[in-house]
Length: 305
Image 1 (cartoon, rainbow, N blue to C red):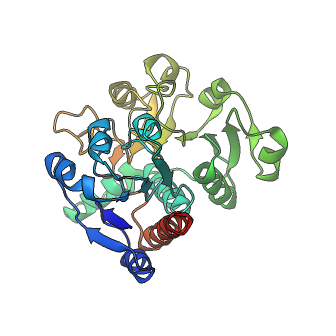
Image 2: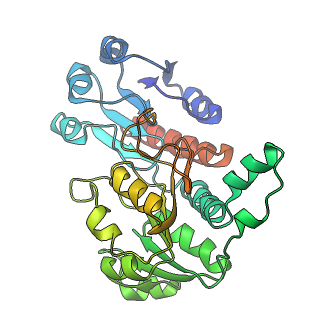
């Protein structure tokens, strides 16, 4: 069985697949045209955020039986086109949950303590304590929208900071939420009562711009927003305007509707907005777990054939 690894994954995962006797080709950074030329020879395709596995790619993949994404979500894969060809699609949703949750907490602390702006000024030689009076996480109300693996890991860490946690998720029952010390409430209550809100939902037609000018206006004045799930869940212009107007105290984005972030993005150069380049899952530990879980998926599949 021939495996094409088209994005960077942990080297231990590659070695595990090779040691099982599979033929592995590592070809990262392929252009869409190069991927179309390469894919017909392979039964297994491994990706992360890149490349985009479009219907055109799937139609060209004459021998393809399995697509595996190292990470959460399947946004860059045309799952319907794959299923129509009886191609199995899989991912590693829990492997990087801790990495993303820790990034959320880091952004939360950076927002409330003004860490990026304070660093920039100090680095310029300006000793300015008065401008950066911050706030504690202790006893703040955190609203977690989406209580999957990442949302739950965020809640655990926020609890350790003494935060009060509300959650919204149509699948999670109140008993499960209570075990996690989360008070389950409607989305509208999350909007109205959160001091900090973090979203951990997939990007779907029904979640596109689920945060928009109308419901951002319902949020508590001085609240903070954190986005480490998928770009497109928030109207970026509406969030930027809410921070500029002072209605929101700040926002942090690790994911964007268009990546890399365009030069003309409304989020750029807004005091109170922190931007990171989709780093949530980018830890050595998280990528190792994702890679090894991915390798296990590939090997189980090959053993069934």
